[in-house]
Image 1 (spheres, rainbow, N blue to C red):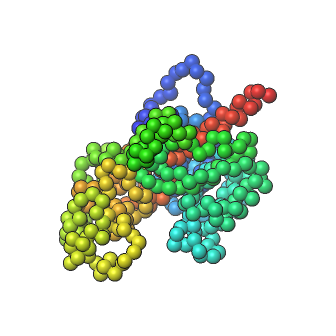
Image 2: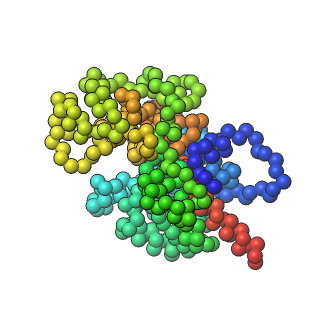
Image 3: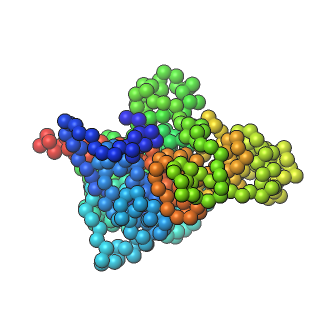
Length: 399
């Protein structure tokens, strides 16, 4: 089954269940921790017939909680997860699966050598909620630097002591129909089956550059589904959008409600125009227009080549981060127009469907978009989890 934004759109636009003579799929109760806007919940709840149902969630950010509640129901609790666990009035409901990504900044390249970062230990309350809820499966998401770290080893030791079997992998969102080469680490734990039997999920899309090398072997590779498709590109997901108007979210129909621009300085506009071709960046700016190049970029001799870069039409995007509206932060210039990408374009690149509702200021919405697990990637992992529960059903029926 291909996991893509089209599939998710189809699920989201269904107005009533279709009657069928087939047996109804069982539903599974889901808890989402450090949920943000709910990218992982969206991937789980919308990708496979709504059989994963969110029953409880948590995030520290007020606007993220409001967004989650607007889309999934009023059960996302705002606040520090440790404080919630200590609150006797907070009851953790029973669940079949716990998902979520503990704060990952402690594992970032800038912070990975910093000792004692408290963000590296947020997996502990995560596993406490796994235990309190009675969940038989958990899915933890983080930056790739988690894998192989001392914290990874501690997670393995703790989860195995709780009775879980584990599998983990680094996955690229582009391999699962998301138009973005975003890499994330996932740890899948299960009490009733070995998750290695179903995880990592088979890739639904392939890098066209690799296809030339793999030739026909690509379609016989066990890593891929039968007949995988080429990576989805920036053109695939944003080319139909008109030029943005205004500089604020507006109360109009999607997708134009969050398709707005900025008010760049005249200097910024000159810099955009100085690097008009796809793929150009700050290095090209220095080469073509040194008089427009900031002194700090002139002194910068290494790293950060994506800064002030243009996206390519016919490639996936680079990773969308929380400040994608600032070209100086990364490769976030539109492939052909002289501007950074809009909130709607970033949301589409992240694989959010247009009718997903974001709540908050434009800064908060950008943070929610950039921090989210791409729903298309989450849906691919949800398929592995669904297969796990199918294994449980088969084992129970054979007894």
